[in-house]
Image (cartoon, rainbow, N blue to C red; front, side, top):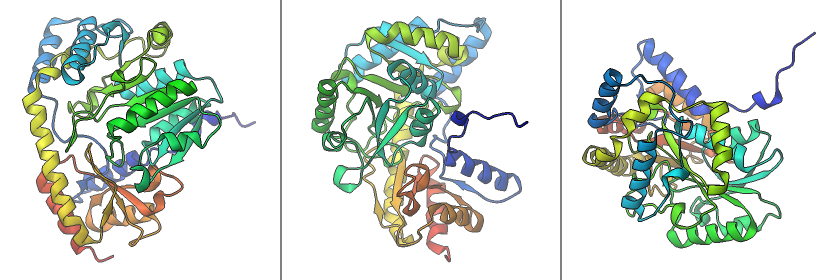
Length: 381
């Protein structure tokens, strides 16, 4: 007799990670690979963070912390909201998590029941959709394009009779697009009036090019805010993030966190206490992202990549490659094999329309961006 496998385990892969594995295998075999596939900074954690980690290793037992996180770190995050957004948040509402991924799991479990419908723009971060499906929730994709600035909107929400939740991201992965403040406020107000739980993914805050990003903390007391030290703070592998939750949800989140995760990583929490004091180093990273963005926007049209979603923030270009291929996965596979440039096919972010798109991450060294552009321009496809 065959032993069953849960249907919840049969979620699609996170294709960006599959591409990373193949790229690493090729590099290990001696190939020269430029990594533009995975959304992570190429810089280490800030020096102050590294020093704090070293000190904690010598000083702390590094056992379990409170399930909701170290109180000093929760207080530091609350001070960050006052300084960055003029938003007053009680530290008690801040939950430190094992990366933003754990934050999404806690938020989805606390806010929704099996069968609930959670809307999100397409294209969007694939783990939203895949985590929802693994939890027996329905991911309701809202096809968004240039007319919607690649973002959800009140009009898109009104087209559906039943929506229990909405995930927004501004800046967004994979497009880099941002919701303008007026539209953001309208979405928050509509969600409150319609009884829709708003979940705002703010993981790319701090990495913007023309204007700062707005936080849902100033728009709705019922919203759940998800953030992380991974992107702006250059701490992806430290697996440390946070969520801001409504008062009424806090105890449920705490019980879930106790049982699912016990506590976030202790060492990463002690180190993250210094992240907010590393502004100069972090802003230097952002200046490099801006330089990389400008370089690629100048060079890639010469390689046939002429149309992009508006890269308002984050460190991605979401390219329309319909003039080059109708199979983005094969296109990216050939690109890796033939010229050693690793990118993520658009089907990872938009299963229905992503066959004609591709995501390029420009978080690496500027010299690598220039070399990738050179290879793409000379690629005989």
